[in-house]
Length: 66
Image 1 (cartoon, rainbow, N blue to C red):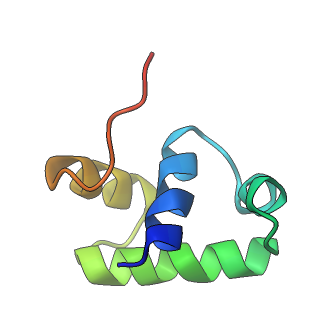
Image 2: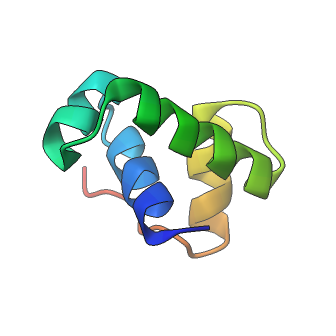
């Protein structure tokens, strides 16, 4: 996975939409969606929530603070 893909996933765990993440990172919302789809494929999951959980389990992203 690329650093950008993991960065997008980190924002997903914060509850941000693809449009919001795109605005933050200077990308289109569609590009963010493509990154998330690729992350899901790499992790063997189907949803954003599953991707966040699996990435945390693997230590790829840190759990967000409450």
